[in-house]
Each structure stands twice: as C-alpha cells, then as structure tokens.
Image 1 (cartoon, one colour):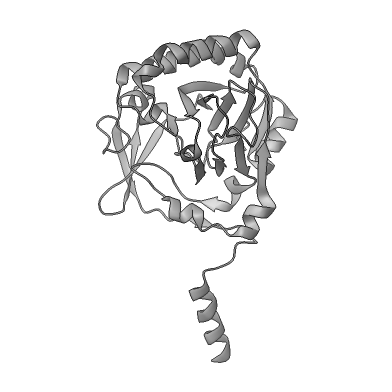
Image 2 (spheres, one colour; image 1 turned 135 degrees about the vertical axis):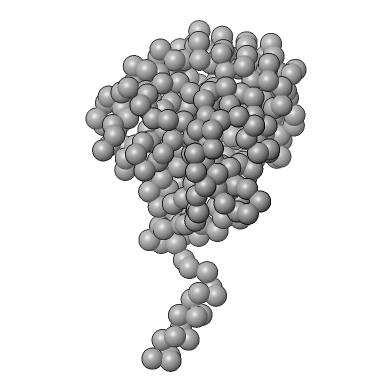
Length: 282
C-alpha cells in the first residue's frame, strides 16, 4: 500500500477515516497569506462562496498559486513521504446564507487505484459553526466509489442521496484555529455551513500528490463517457472548468459509475418495493 505520511498515526487516521488534522502555519504565515489575498481579491470576489478555480482570470490564478506555494510547500513536505505540490487556491466564504457549501467530493487528480492524492484545507481565521467550519463524512473515501471531474460529475443529486442515517453517524465537524490544516483524501465527502459572522472567512486549499504519480483530469463528454486526460499544473491554472479540456493528452475514455456503499445506506424505495415483490413471488 502506498504511504502518504511519515507519521504512522497520521497514516492510520487517513486510511481509516479519510482525514487528519495538524498545525501547519504560524502567525507570520497567516498574516502573509491574508495580506496577499487582500491585495488581489479585487480581481475575483463574487458573493457567497467562491474559490480560485472558478475564476477565468489566469493572471489571478497564477498569483494565488505562487503565493500559497511559496508559503507552504516546505512546511507541508515535512509531513509527507515523497510528494509534490500540485496547485494552490483560496477558498472563501463571504458573510451570508448563500455561502453554504453542500456535500461534495473534490476532483480525482491521480489514478486512485494506485495512489492517494491529498487536499490540504487550512483556514486563515479560527473557524467554528458560525463562520463556515469544515465538516467531513468520515470513511466516505472508502464507501463512495467512482471518478469525479468536470463539468459537474457526479452532481449534487448523487451526494444528496446519502441517507440521513449515514450523515448522522459519520459527520465530523472540525472547529479548528487558524493555521491548522485538515489533510483529507480527495475522495472524502466534505461540506460546510454558511458564514454567518461579519468577517470574510478565507482559507487556503492545495493539493499534494505522490511524486511518482501522473496527474489526470476527468471530463464527462456529451455521451456521458469519462475522458481521462494527462495534464500538468498549468492545466489547472488556465483551463475553464466548465469547458472541455483545451490542453493535456487524452489517454482513454472510461465507463464510470458512482456508488454509495455505506452499510447503513438505505436503498431507494423503488428497489425496496421490487425486492418485496420478488420475495412474495418465490
């Protein structure tokens, strides 16, 4: 099995639950990144929730990427085995109910049958239930199967079908201080309540991948087939996420099915009724 973290306890937590929490940034780092965000936020600052990948401003995305990489890459590498920094983003919640983020998974970045890629989510302010702290669905990296990518697959209807029983049992709310990172498997379900404070909640998010792993992006075409592209860092800083990839190499076309396999997940009512009919016909 491929090892992600040097610390064996971190590795065990990642494998079992899909995430691990540890300190990453000091006060100087936090101030530096907050100041950098303040200096360039005029280039992309819509209402509600917004993240760097949604911007079409390539210059802005490169500035964000470089600022985060310069601050965090050496610190992050001390925790990982042989990994590299892929791409960095700001993830921001402006005050207001519209900043709520429903359950979702991040894109797949590597061949997940061989490797695990990691998202590093780190707030620049203390976060709690009032200003948009991160929530995760523990073990969803194990029980949710299938690829994720653009334009929007799977969609929110799929994630919303996770049963209340599963959500109640596995949801973990992460109230953490500024500079603390939640390192999670990109397959892990995560979500967050709205920022109901008076302050903009700024966090950084960056991807760490095994050095040996090729980088992939998955795109769902008009025939509902998944196109697998081999790409590089520049792809994520220049590509419009709603459009067909304009760079990279098409490697293969894949048939993909996303499934929810928690033991507690209730089957759709139509299937349950069908099973009952089949029982009485025996």
